[in-house]
Image (cartoon, rainbow, N blue to C red):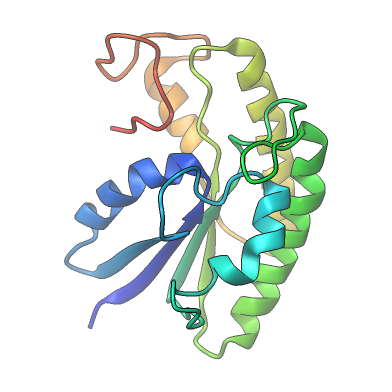
Length: 184
């Protein structure tokens, strides 16, 4: 029997979900939530508002995965507010805290022993100032996850260990600026 893994994340997770699924095909069924495309779970405020829907199948059936991997970060990098697309930097930490508390409570209450895992946000390789925001948000996210006992996967470090610090426009054999959605 395979493990059931749900990746609940912002737009970059849409890019790596198929690769994770392919790597884990023998041991897990890997799915992405939300189930459609676009920007995924978007910014933290939107993720918080929609969390109950994001934890359900398209028909509304509650999901009870063995592992829930979640990430937020790339949609809280500036001070624009476009609900369901982009949120201000100042909303990242308070809404990530709320999301994390709710997920910890949900995992404990769902009876299946769902394990939580948080993905630290990937770098903005073409923009050093945006990557500074990513790094700041990542430090806050690591503190939140540590506080609540949620393990993390540091995607930022994985990429910068190969590419160097941002800005670094050519990485992973890209011919132009590295796009976080074009994971390899």
